[in-house]
Length: 283
Ligand SMILES: C[C@](O)(CO)[C@H](O)COP(=O)(O)OP(=O)(O)OC[C@H]1O[C@@H](n2ccc(N)nc2=O)[C@H](O)[C@@H]1O
Ligand SMILES: Nc1ncnc2c1ncn2[C@@H]1O[C@H](COP(=O)(O)OP(=O)(O)OP(=O)(O)O)[C@@H](O)[C@H]1O
Image 1 (cartoon, rainbow, N blue to C red):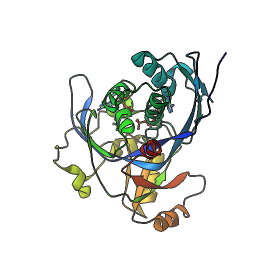
Image 2 (cartoon, rainbow, N blue to C red):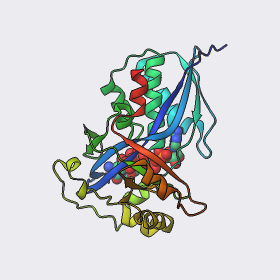
Image 3 (tube, helix red, strand yellow):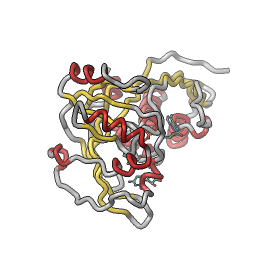
Image 4 (tube, protein in one colour):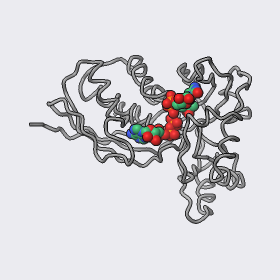
């Protein structure tokens, strides 16, 4: 027997990497980096119903991802184990974000699950601990748990909240999934960019060190970037495949979007230093 309580939709926004500088490679293969995260006001949504029997049920399933491997289910189980909570959840996912696009959909889903169930189960895990728990699920989970635009250093685990401009973006989604591990193992990847102090205040120095190798390996990404650059300063996010152009207002982003080649997918979206998930928590 289960008893479900209705619950509102919780946002799981995407992120952009406004820069991704690779400063070195550690002995364990992981890379030292400097990357600036900002959220966008576009993402997935999740809805939770509390169950008394401890089961975690997710619907619909994601194509190609077994339920036990889904970061949503893994996040819920992790919170159960960590807190000793005996409650479960029925979780509904409204998936909008492409996978392998470098916009952090899986990580954001995991973070929203941790934050929402922490509230709905009344487990009262403090934010620092919740972010630490999330790190075991993926390098980008903590920034989504904290919900502030941030500069990340180390291997991505040291986060410092920042305030940067909140422009409009035209986000182009090439029809290709890029593997983060393949990009980081690429022999041609530049790995010796000098570390820059207060990088968040120097947008003219923001680059993505993964962009050139991804454009070489995936012509669709190179083509999307070339097209966007006709309209605005543009870059790839994370390890790709998505690329974004930066616009000062919504109108000019929409004007470029109207010229999108047939068959391409793109979204006009706004940068946010405060995640829509935090806004929901404040309600
Ligand atoms: C670099 C970013 O894309 C920036 O948003 C992310 O931090 C990567 O986040 P993610 O996909 O959650 O990454 P993880 O699942 O932690 O790592 C995937 C793979 O990327 C490589 N990796 C990741 C982060 C890092 N600092 N150095 C690495 O070399 C490792 O080969 C690792 O096996
Ligand atoms: N709930 C989930 N949503 C998306 N992907 C998931 C989820 N659970 C597990 N995955 C797995 O994680 C992989 C990476 O998905 P994700 O959407 O986070 O990619 P990404 O945007 O490239 O991530 P990042 O920017 O963190 O590198 C997927 O290919 C999928 O196999």
